[in-house]
Every structure is written in structure tokens, then in C-alpha cells.
Image (cartoon, rainbow, N blue to C red; front, side, top):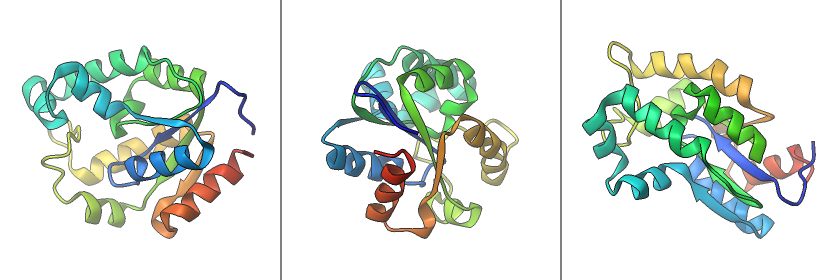
Length: 170
């Protein structure tokens, strides 16, 4: 798989998978820019992600995320997304139009260890679901959206970047 000159690389995955860590490293290696859709949402609404989620609830937050991501325009950019972006087919379709989607995968124990209770991360959990339920619910969505999967809990950040570059034939 190869990218053209105007393509982007989009990073998806659970909270704690390394999207915010790897995006700037990968962008620097490629001499590209990077963008974090969670920061775009915060900028748009002028509040921290958790405050937005607390104020509007999970369903409305997912719609807001869909609106922001489905309007995204970028080229030669590494885009890190919120973990819940895969709930919106419209958003995923837009991301596919922008370039290659890389699923940063972590195991359930690593996820639980890294995010704790996820109380202050802007992490979307619908009522009645546990963090494990959300993890299990999202895995097939990430896999369906991804052009490439990299297990980030089994390699150092620079090694993960190497795997992404190699896997996308850059």
C-alpha cells in the first residue's frame, strides 16, 4: 500500500494506544504536520473534552465528533483521532478519503492499565457499559476501518513508527 503526495495517515485506536504520542513522531519522520481531532473539538467548543462530554452526554458528543471529523480537510498530515470516531460511518468514510487508516492496537490489560477509570479523558462510555465492554465493542470497528494494524503495547514508539512506515510502504 502506498500513499500519494496529498494523502494523510490517520491513527485510530483505544485511549492509551499511543495515538497522541505516535502522531507527532511519525509526522516529524515524514516531515509532515500532525493534527489531533480531540484538540480540534476542544478548540471548536472552547472547553476540555471531558467538559464537553459531561455537558452534552455520550450520544450528542458522538454527533459533535462526527460533525467535526466528517468536515476534515488535510494533506500530508498525520491525524490522530478520538477512540470513539469509529462509531460514525460518515466520519470513517471521510478519514478513508483523506488517506490510510492505521489501527494502533493494545491488549485489554494494557488498555485498562493505561486509562484507569477514564474519568477525565473525554472517554465515551454509554450507560450500562464497562470499560471492558467498550473495548470489546470497538475492536471489530477498528479492524473494519483499518488498512494496517500495529500492536503498540509490544514495541517502543520509534519501533511503532518504523512499523507504520514499513507497513504503508513509505
